Image (cartoon, rainbow, N blue to C red; front, side):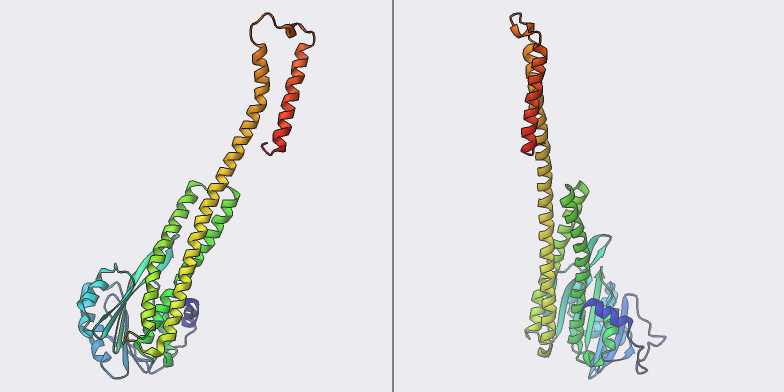
Length: 352
């Protein structure tokens, strides 16, 4: 499912069923908590405060799905106490400077994925840290990232799928992250096509070259953020992670294919930008060569009258042709004829 499909489904999702219990007035979420809900058999049964999430996760056939946005250390430690999270994983989620990875801490799974958004023409990066264990999944967002509210709203309309458990929610989040790389690449692709059109028309200006360099650098950073996800998804797909059931392997295989498609798109755009830069250099060199040939042609043509004038400008008495009655006119004819012949030859050879 693509990101656009998820967003469309979220916009067209029906109202929650009466079985969904809203949060009680005294159970307001703390700052940094986007959502904290409990699901039973794929149906949201309650919005709960983080302080009670651990108790709900230990109930049979219940899953707690918590979404956090740039939480402080106190909130993360509260979540840690509820689900007995490993301190190293919590430390990684606090620092938010991690490369994509998958780590196991006892019965819990810790996944890191990089997110990307195009902001004012530059790719801005963020991180999502996911804690997964029996009966719970916690997503922690940092930096530039699209909200996962649309993912939650969409799958809430499909209780059968959501009833598959916390590992299915992990798939839904990763699929949404990978799908959101494509709008960034599509926007860059449109700009790359504009750059290609400029290259063929005239040499690139300094501002164009700086923009091209920034795009290539951003694409390289995006590739470094995307590439490790292939290994993460393959491990989730191969059934080597006990927290993920083998029946979900086809779904993570689909995410892996999407990641590889993104990689290919990034590599293709970087190559096009490299070719555009090389083409710009060739166009510039070609124009410089054309100007050089034109200047050399006119210099050769002007050399004829210059040479003749230099010869007859010497102060010698014994120059018989100076006494000829039509010598001046004869010299002019020779000069004009020589210049005309040279002009015709240069024009024929494409120098003028």
